[in-house]
Image (cartoon, rainbow, N blue to C red):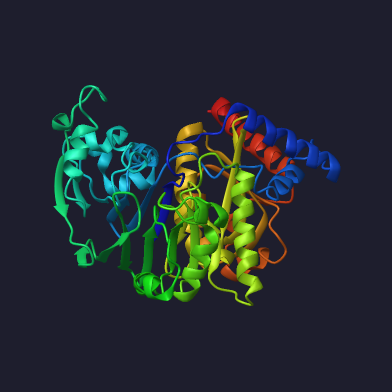
Length: 453
């Protein structure tokens, strides 16, 4: 089961403002100056940037949407503005993700679930491009009986240029009964009512030996056991609980009947329900990245203050992917890239194993398509581990990329190439400059062959 987040902000889309981006740049340069970072050394810059969680990126500004892949089945939950990004990826015929599901060819099918119909959970649907491709089919699941009517109303000509009846794909609506489990695409999906204006519903998805629970847009006004026990049961033993953490604890107490909760309440509920990972979501659109990260840190400290290690507290951000059930933060694998003089420099960090292979293949495929170059340098100094799955993926890459070089292979990683008996299959260098010289020599040799012929 692959879980991915496309939108995690609550209430309204909240993209970064220019002055916020400027502030991040200033903060990064200021910190770099204080630490004496050599800004002419790309390796030093990349290592430094990796230490700046609140400066180097963003939690994202799109509203709620996340997807679950189970084999060739795609389940989508809510259609906030994040679903537009999902649609763009599904329509990119050059990506492995798009090829897997076939929406760009009009051969795709997906299952879409709605928690409720507040604006931030439906506003992206008209902009979901696969919806407008003939041949695609969507099964839409909902507990509220008025969901189909809301879908029609939000696309009336006063609000949108294309009306619901003009949608080109095939839509089938299915009303669910609260608490009644159904089997969909190899998963068992059940629902529970959450306290929220006009009601919202949480979903529990069980499949591929993993359990994911979505419980955004929920208020826990009464924190007594008698009230919460039904949630303990519904959330019990989840690998991931996606929880509404829009408010601070103080705000959650003051803003009664507003329909949202806090990270600390989520921590207590997740702990009592034996949840493995608590993912904080539905972020306040007025909160800065630094403020959201502060909430995560405080919640982690709150858990440790009880002498507990679980649940693990994480931040739900756009683009976050989790392989379940065996996801381990220690397995994190990251890719950073840049194009310089026609060469793609890809810095690999973390553990290059089974979890990383699909991510690497898709990233490489998109980069080659976008930059239209056959020169790739894989910077490996930040790799902590290389497994057999990573070796196999690199061998496949060696066959498809004409000019491939590995640079800065760590001492603990290089023996893996020797044990696998494939060290001679790769061009391995200590520095970027050595790889670039080799590329130039190869290009020169090829030109000479053409001249001689």
